[in-house]
Image (cartoon, rainbow, N blue to C red; front, side, top):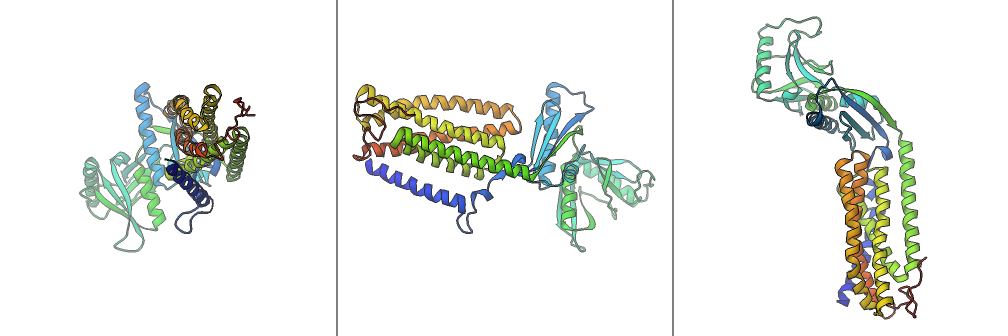
Length: 434
């Protein structure tokens, strides 16, 4: 058992050193430094956010909630299709949608991309609506096999396919008479988004089967943009912009640097206090804390969590909670020596057993609060909740596994397993820790 703990301790130290080196410097061309993996939120990276409010709806209660959820899904699809960086679309209150677009430099272009009302329709030159965005199953980009550039491919549902076939048949047969108000030639179909004509391809033959393509000597960027707008579909409710804010990249960068500095200083101070107050037990806790921080950062990067200022606050708070779990364990170990006169080795084993229930109780109650924040919160509140919950789970693991491995190893050592190094005087009085 002793050899097993020694091997485990050595492996943890090796992985810790290698992990932190990789985190800071990377590992050649295979693994980039952690800073290249972490996704930054709007408040750190800079960008734009817009708040949209539902208009002209009589829905209330569950009906309104369902309507807003559907609206949120459509906007999320549209924003994601535009290839914007780490967008966040959330519902605020009962009838508002908040859209955060980190990394966006041009606010007007970003807001135009997501659309204010996002009402999409296909119309003939005489002003009749053929189908709307709800009939579009998919829109994509393909290389033009008949010429240069790219084309936009369209696929309609069964209802849209029938309507499109009837409309194109009428156009090809010359039944459509152009209306001056539409500004469309008789042979064209207008694609209208938010009352703005975004494309008007000409119809050369009857389109059957619900599949067609738009040709127009598009380059790849223009074709992707048009297909994304079409793919976004029609919103179930009209929205109007009520608030827009731009976060400059300088402000975000300064906030990130200050947060990193505060986090590093805080961790260093915690380690110093633990070493002074708890000596060899503080060393075990410090190693566990470094493992905790390393695992925390890579979990955020691996799962693509978007890091925000409230998220960083949750991280720093959970660091304190991770240390708190260790302090509870150390107090139990000292109590075993002081009250029961046990040896360091026995006291360490018994102290862990007695402290485990207390540690789990304190952490799980906070975890429940984090779950509630995530479930009922939105935006930054959910970001705080996610980082807090990750921290709580990690703190339990590092306190009960990593700290245990090193403390048990120290306790079994004739050199390190002394009352003095464990912060206990020979007369069994516990040395006050700061």
